[in-house]
Image (cartoon, rainbow, N blue to C red; front, top):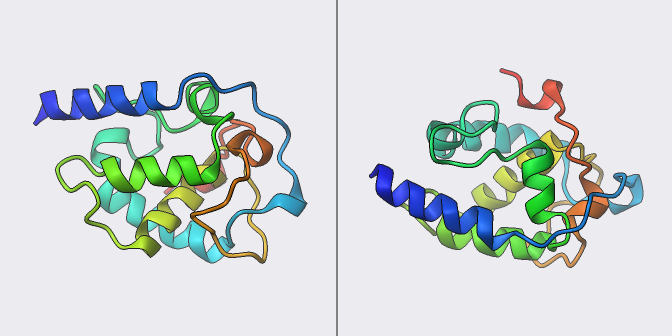
Length: 146
């Protein structure tokens, strides 16, 4: 199982390479609601926390999902690109098994943990907005805390 996690995680890290530095989050480009962040925190803990750590800091072979590492890999990619990757490759051993809402909520939580601000518009898995336009990679302890 650890070897599989290592392969999947390597694909995760390499899949997002080539991104530019993050831009400051913009309130007019919110990509999700606070309710999605709240539910995403619960879903993340259930389905992702074992490998990526409860605080999204990485755990063993799984990469961190916050900070410079995350933003460096994903800021130049769209929210759609991130959703497509996560929903087809995660969680390890159960890739694609979560509902569309669960994937959307988990991604909302990850984006919020990286400084993206929730708004009135629900998550759109087809959004072409670049992650770097909404998330600056500054870890938000109020989001990642228990």
